Image (cartoon, rainbow over all chains, first blue to last red; front, side, top):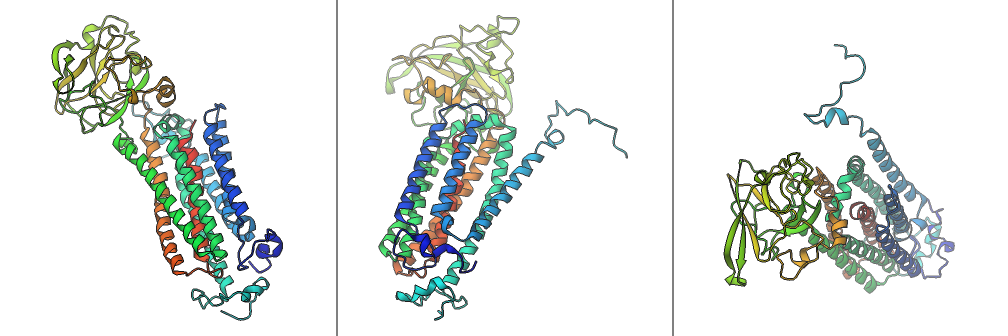
Length: 135
Length: 418
């Protein structure tokens, strides 16, 4: 968080753009347009990929992989994280990690109570295995 | 503004004349300090936004994990075309938002205003397309939870008119019981699609009307009754391929002669998940030219009448034959891809609960973004932003990119289910 961050050192903006002010990275036209074109191509790819049956969950995996690549491009170049302070990356990756924990733990737990909660009255769950509860 | 810049890279800050922007608050050391503080806060906000949305992603992941069949069915109601266009629109607006930051940094006021205007236009475009999609779903009762009820149905003693299908009326999906394939159909007039009807008496009069004349002169020439299927039951073992498509769940008891049309009362017919229906089954019977179906049922309120006139929806459209209008009829390819799996699985409405919650929350973010960008546009026109003070543009752009990010995930998750 100090001035030691390389965000605005001359080395990081070697593209020769005139920096009006030094305290943030200025994206170059080249980076912006190339990121945009890459995002467009990936959008086309992900739509096109649905026409191919990869079997199993591979279609979902491919779609998610493309989405992750697109998201990474947006974060790195549109949101300047590539040139930004490391701490900002820590914050956002931390947020993503906690979201992953949230989803992961919820998924692990989701089948646990299915039998006791969502049973059909005509089709009750099997009797619990093990000794009867102690009263 | 302090005269001594504590940061070495601010050393050149004095070389241009924006010293002392009126928007640099006095409790910051300098413009750099203010900018960094704001940006740090913005990144924390974005992290919590991710966690905020992750609750809905949990709902999505859990429901998809447990009910994959609902997802692979329900996404057919979404149009990939609109989703893809919206993705492009949003990425374009993201580009212009990023460009706006660049313009502000380089003191390009006109460029900044242009970028902001373009971003706002794209945001409105996104909402407009979303509106088209929502309207279509509302019109066809493709809604959340129990409100998911896309069926063709007519309440009361209304006619179900085959000839007049679809002139700007509610159109929906009909599942053809005989072919196990869905087809499109719609009903005459605008009926209340209350599926929770009671009191079906089981007495219907169904007639096949032969019509003559064109336009206003169109009138009934003759009518013949269509018998209930029970009377036609010929196969004692209940094996009747033309009817068994309903998978027995809807109470189809009677087998019938596939060559003759008949009607039967259906409780909880799949197409109307929770409503009774009188279903006219045609089987292999050829629908004659100039024929309409009239169904009147005795009940208070009377049951829903459904017509399934086409044993084979893949049949090519014959000129002069009473049939679905071409635009309303699915091609073979479309039928396979859109409704190949027959009637909606149970609880398909849950998909749309998740769909509306996720796209709705995302849409609210888009609306908030529009207000923010309009505010920034006004300030940009007033010339508030300088290379020394462009924090708000940068923060708003970060927010807008996050909105884009969320959509980058929503699009494949909702629209591109294989």
